[in-house]
Length: 133
Image 1 (cartoon, rainbow, N blue to C red):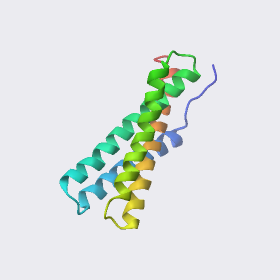
Image 2: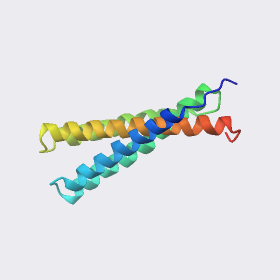
Image 3: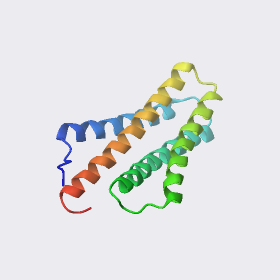
């Protein structure tokens, strides 16, 4: 087995990306002057996106390692992540936010999704090394 142990720096950077993206996104929502139902929409899109990105990373990795992942679940993972990005894009496109705010939400969202994927990868790599996978 190849040693896929992530470095401490990569683990830290992954957690930093996840926390920085999610926290700045939520701070932006808290400070935004929008209706509570709009804030709820954007918060739900963030939570769904984080779950979908972790689920997609896991199913892609499972397939790469020869573990069984049904085509239906694999397809649902891809549809979910694309739907999350589409929902955020449509919400931002139709919002009355300034373009700088739209960019802020889009970038912090993508940073959070990236962080979630890399944290999941690190957790899986460490578990495999420790024989818990």
